[in-house]
Image (cartoon, rainbow, N blue to C red):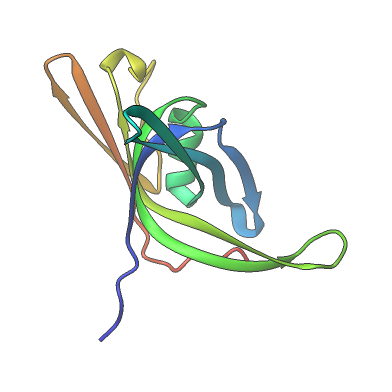
Length: 149
């Protein structure tokens, strides 16, 4: 039996996505996402913020480049991935990131009303509207296993 690697996050972008184009015109978007939780400590309301490194590939990355900006509230589903790399001094480093498989913009409709149509090859979009609020879903279409190297 194989395991399950599933991550679900709702948080705010810490900065605009960084967009890169790799060999074969593969688009990659990466950005930090802040999730916060509140708890009571000695009768005071405390808040703890956790930062997550998010990576999106191909069509999903292209859609992210159009719709995601610093401060946006977003729901993200993906999987946890840890990888190694060598820094400039040749020291082996490890980083853990969430490889997003889909995301949903959250908030008021005015927060992300498009100025034109949002057709992007490689990703699909569906809009749901309810009493002044709206959600826009984006999902990756290809089933390839993505790796940075």
